[in-house]
Image (cartoon, rainbow, N blue to C red; front, side, top):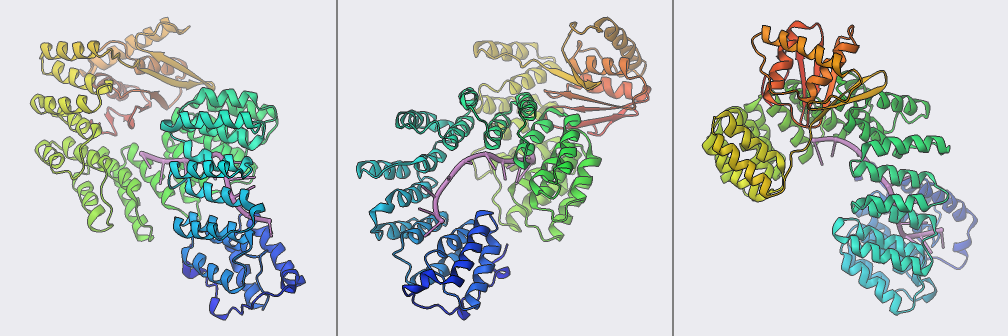
Amino acid sequence: MSRQSLPLCFKTARLQQPTETSFAVASGGKWNTQLRQLSKNGQYKQALLLYRQMLRSGATPNAFTFPFILKSSAALSIRLTGKQLHCHVVKSGCLLEPFVQTALISLYTKFRLFHNALKVFDEIADSARLTVCYNALISGFIQKSLTQGFLLFLEMRSNCVPLNTVTILGLVPGCTIPLHLNLGSSLHCLVAKLGFTSHHDVANCFLSMYARCESIESSRRLFDEIPERSLITWNAMISGYSQNGLCMKVLDLFRDMQCSGVPPDEVTLVGVLSSCANLGEQRIGLEVEEMIKFRGFVSNPFLRNSLISMYARCGNLVRARANFDAMAEKTLVSWTAIIGGYGMHGQGEVAVELFDQMIKAGIRPDKTVFVCVLTACSHAGLTEKGLDYFYSMKEVYRLSPLSVHYSCVVDLLGRAGRLAEALNLIESMPLQPDGPVWGALLGACKIHKNVELAELAFNKVVELEPTNIGYYVLQSNIYSEAGDMEGVVRVRVMMRERGLKKDPGYSYVEYKGENHLFVAGDRHHPQSKEIYGMLKRLENLAKQGDEGENSGVHSERLAIAFALLNMSSIKEILVIKNLRICGDCHRFVKAISKFVDCRFIVRDATRFHHFDGGSCSCKDYW
DNA sequence: TTAGGGTTAG
């Protein structure tokens, strides 16, 4: 919302010095009751508009008015209005009212005007109100500095100001990164000693803190100890699993929640959709969309954006697009989700067209949407277009590219065979190039079989990310393709010395509502014999096309054989794979797609491959 | 009346 859309007409406000009676004026009371209601419901814009009406009507704001109005201004982040409101407070003589002072502290810390917040705090006289004022100050300062927040807390304790649960809730957000886990746990212990842990809100808050600190088992322990789980408890646990990438656990917990009789809200469903997206679980995603309609959440932009992303990542661009088109007000996030969606499916042309449309619609791009559009250009081989976007970041939009943007452009140049330019770009970067930047160059060296440059990139990348197994595998394959077996051995020795083991690759397909998962050389499936029989026939077909090579029985081949065996009439098969598809399997699927009347879609670790009629949407560039 | 907990894209 822009400031222009909210003319508060302060100039016409008739502010009077309050009298004893003005605090109890009946009309003022009515305004205040309404303001309280709007603020409580989060209708902050309406609250400010009502305040304007109040002033125009000639009613006088009092100490009961300002807390709601200041909170609304802070929530909407309208700094100018906030300052004007402070003037109103002064003019109306409410500056020494503790409730108003508390709200002012909150407002100033929200706007990061910490000096002003402290000034207000120092003027507070009424010691009876100190807990609340300290709380406002602590929760504001904790976002600026963990140390300052805790120092205020210690000061509060040494001044013998009583704590309450809100004091604790204000401190916890300072401990939500793994680095501060110990501090957070100590606080939790202290809180237990003080007897606050049985408070529902406090328990939820620590549950969420542990999840953000990647200590998810601690979250779950707390969750299991909470006797009555509210919607917020379920949401905190579901979001916690979701943030930690534990997608199956999210879906299991969501099922438990449904059994428990607590109905989900928008926040729950956002977490569930994000897990469906990661797992490629479109079936559950579809159920969630039905739930969204049933519960009347369709206009929630968070959910729409999640649906766009979920469908795109489950391979259903049609539904992703339908959700995007159905949005009355498309936000930057919506555009980012759909642009990213087309990009990951190799439809770079559509992605850039949408990006241009977004600009025409007057939406200012951010660094994230640039990652999406650059990736889209890279996946579709739109080199010049991508370079134009990259340079426009700085020149047109005044956005300094991050390392991730450089790695996109190195990828873009590298795939196009412009390796020297890619190296040049890395060497002229104003930032220190990180692992993914050198990794992108290494990937390009593999495509273009440049062993010499690969060695340079590999040395850099293992220095920066010594435990990232993917780079060793890449380099080993580069040596192998070049026939340099000594090189292969050298890389393997490095891996062994560093105790690194290859991630096991797996693939799955959905059949009759269940996912069937395969690992390389898998013989555990009950239909194993038939699957290998089908695979043999497929390999013969592939050889007929003279494009098949055998690189062992990789998991995606088993998944495809299983799907063709059981779903003979199906016209489209989606395989989800955790790693990147290898060159041999890519050739294999391309070859069989020429002979089998079915489209194969493979979602690998980085993108989608659509195989049809003997070719792939990635144009062999991935 | 005031302070505080759970939220999407890459």
